[in-house]
Image 1: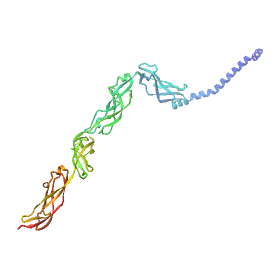
Image 2 (image 1 turned 180 degrees about the vertical axis):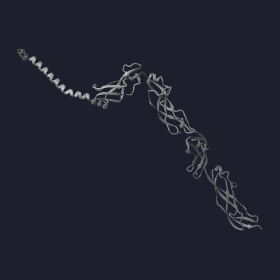
Image 3 (image 1 turned 90 degrees about the vertical axis):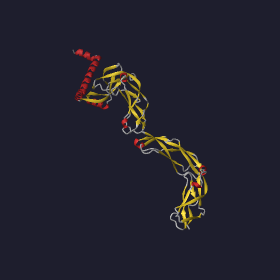
Length: 412
């Protein structure tokens, strides 16, 4: 036996094999000493956490199909070493997904899957699976209708045909959903009273026949809506009012408006108070024929007028000044017991300067004027009396003198 052992010990292969076995035993012993207590600690440190609202990623051909029925988020329950669980919950660096790359058209049940999470954790997903509907992706063009609360219109105001930009939108969704579309509406949301035309953005809603909102993509999702609002209106005549005095030597012959009537828009109560529109025409700087554009001023409660301004044509004439000589002065009110003689002027006549257009002046003479003095209550003696004059309104005129000197005497 000793000889056999000696021979074994002398063999280098035996020695090498023995050394390898001893080394393995030492390694196993050390590993058990190191890992045994730690494994026990790990078993004592196991925990479970629920990670809520984890986003769901869908994998499918987005250019060809539309998927409905999948939730946007799920809850993920993880169990294992507390440090690994805590890390997964805090970082949320894993992905929950539905693999629909090989799904068929129609409804099918698909399990949720998770990736990029530690394989040392036990993972479950709530719910575990979901029924999804895979449909052929369809895009169609639809005309947009407008909806807004007409009760907000001011009393008497009316909304006209709305203008929509763009008038049509492209709607993308599953074929079965597209086939359910009954209404495509842009809802105009306003709270204040409407008394004029307005423009605003409006979101597009897609509804089925029961007015349920459909899950589709709309391009564009908003449209620009202009709603023309027509207020109560009233047609009234134009009244020209001349203001100011033209330059010396110029006479205003005529002021002719281009239109005789205007249309006013506004509250009915304000319109009821208006019977005409006064257009002031200032002729102070007029030196000859001229055309003017005069804006129309809006009164309280009036929102618009058509036209907004009026063109007027001012026709002028050149004035000249003449003197009408020897216009007699008559007297009134003298008692029958007295007589009256003119002392200054002794002929009882005065001159009058008249200014006007030649056309008018050619018809003016002494008979166009009535000059009188009032002798009522006068007694004998000399008196200075003020001349009372009446003359035509179509010209400017002025007495050369405004008083006369008379003598009252008793009748024999």
